[in-house]
Image 1: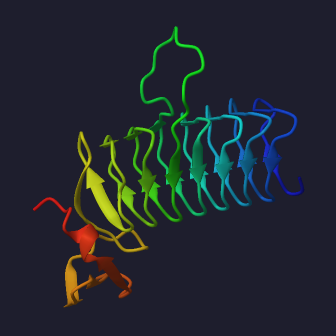
Image 2: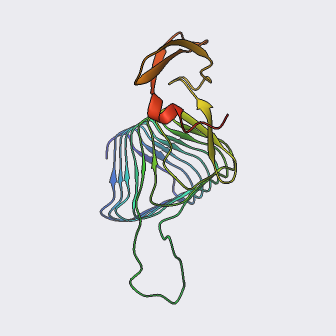
Length: 196
């Protein structure tokens, strides 16, 4: 584990895989079968469960728990104290409960104090607003807010809301970012689920 920083007050169990350039801050706990990619920043009081897979350049802010069944792809941002779940029907007395999976795709951002209810996929470069409760899949570039979270728009890779429509076809709507000028294609199937 070259060029890895692990704070003296962090716990990284034997068997955990930590990529180059990753920084793990105080009071974090990484379980033995977790895999963390290169260039990640794992904040204070973060818990990463066994068998969790985290990609490269992921930023997990303070107070986040990433439980078994969660996969986080490259370039994801997890805001402070956001929550992942992994049990759809939790009971303390049930033995042999079922783990439901969650996938966070490349470039997605999750705001502070958001809750991601298990068995969902957060699409590439989507943005989950602070405090949102996500109970269903979020499309690529989708912007969701509220409780329950609802799709209210789309964002660019740079995070800027997309407002300028360039063209429409039978299958997609192309939008241009007012900040970086990138053209993003939104499938009509995703656009139809937007709250108006």
